Image (cartoon, rainbow, N blue to C red; front, side, top):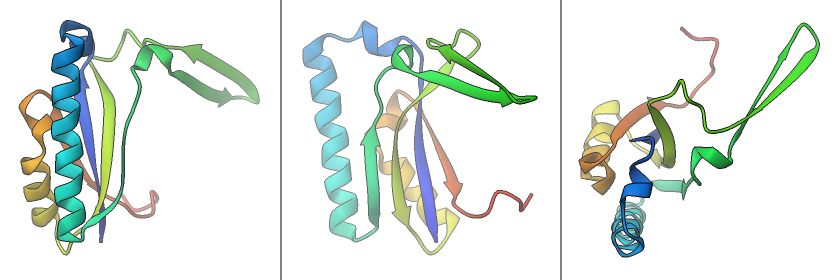
Length: 118
């Protein structure tokens, strides 16, 4: 089964780090990805740019609405993801617990699958 491990980080925390601190944390995340590759469970991964560079699109009643970030109503932003293959959700949770970002962000673990099922 495939699971997405989302990194939901507090908005604004990146700005609180020095460039050196940010690069050191990023390297830890790259090392984590290499560990997942070595275990044979990693399908894909990527970090995401700050939400201030994002946009949100909605179409309601045939009308298109596009909003630029940042998104003030959100306390967290998705800072990246890992897509992994695991036999069980418990295994995916254990992999998420190994992620360095769990120290400064929330790891959300979700199984992939059809969205019409509950």
